[in-house]
Image (cartoon, rainbow, N blue to C red; front, side, top):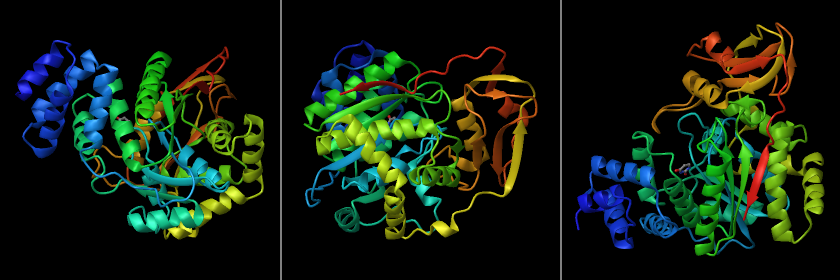
Length: 424
Ligand code: URA
């Protein structure tokens, strides 16, 4: 077998065998398959897709490329949550301590942000001192002691995905259901949790642009979960506008803290409560209504925030030192009307440009910069009402570019629903 045979087979839209997938993936990891050959195969997969069997084999081959984490020494059911990536998506920062405050074990390995979407690790690292690289022993001990630990992806976990994802990122081969599903699930299975819950984002700021493709991805994620006997639930949520008001690392931590104290924006709260009530319902065997009551109680009585503080202190962070950039500009509306659109993708790109995100995994992040919306889709604005604030540091920004993210019209369009489907 040669790699050219494998590429040609997929180019002709034929089903690859397990051996052919192993040959390509393992060869790419050990360097015998070259970047341009793997790019060619990836593009053939983007264009022709993969069957469920091929996608499960691809997941399994990637999973076997590195270590798997053994969480069996953690008492109780361990939950992992993942998002396919959005703008202003600080759900994990709220959901993880909220669930941990109710006794659920959260052993979470999170990623750094890439492109226009942010990453939980960058957000946590905006808290001075917060160590996202604690040892596996400390990680497990911390989950046993306080129910929660969040770390970056360590050493040799799915090295095949690390290498293939970096290549996909620069070869236009990210948007593919089998490639996304195998990338996400190989990491989730390797991370060792018992229950996997995935927030599949759909809309202008997300990888999946249509509800139909988000459903297709969710079905594939659930099937892979079934194969590994790991209950997997996907919720499909709208990402046409940023989630909440803040975009940018420390700004998002501040919004998450407010939400943990019971003062969160309604859209962020809706996603958090929907995800958490599914998990609480499944683990504690209680109804959805009882689960929701319990969750709101934890937000309003300070327990959820206390758990977040415990997490931060345990990993060396100091919330008193959390800062945002002090060069703040207010952007005003140049017309009156209803905000019918705030382009999440464009705003995410702007936030990245001013330093809140990175183009390559080695880029430095400017933690204090970002954007805080003052109005959301569906709101009415007068001329000169503030649309948003921009927090800048070294890089500058064109006001026209920001204004072009908004569609302000005389007639109000009903905003899209936030929770679009739940697939399990
Ligand atoms: N997140 C991942 O981990 N992998 C993808 O391919 C896309 C989003």
